[in-house]
Image (cartoon, rainbow, N blue to C red; front, side):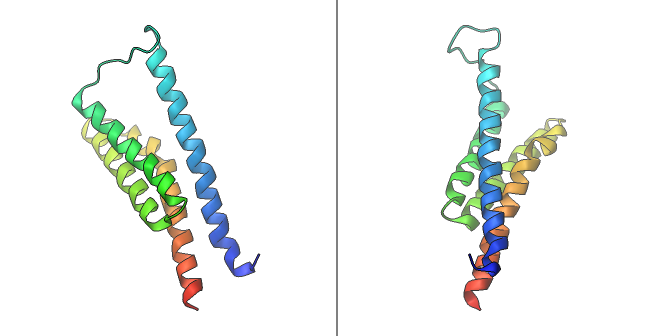
Length: 124
């Protein structure tokens, strides 16, 4: 591997690995919460703001999948979904939403840095 491509490649693969781990963590959490104290396959009723949080979260997860091929677009999807999620959590008075989304913000930065460095190397 060309030494100039080492940093973008490390950023890309670090983002991919952390992304997969983040999706797995949230899915295990979601499955655990949906089964707690309820019959099998029954999901709790959610308010509109809770449903919106899921939309924002899964938008970020979709961005992780997109970033495997189109890093810049995926990074913006991840960042947008995480920012909207954290913003809604702050509006609800739950500041820990920023902490929950910090891995997604890191993933977005890693993919964006990888894209930016690859673009600069191609223009040389």
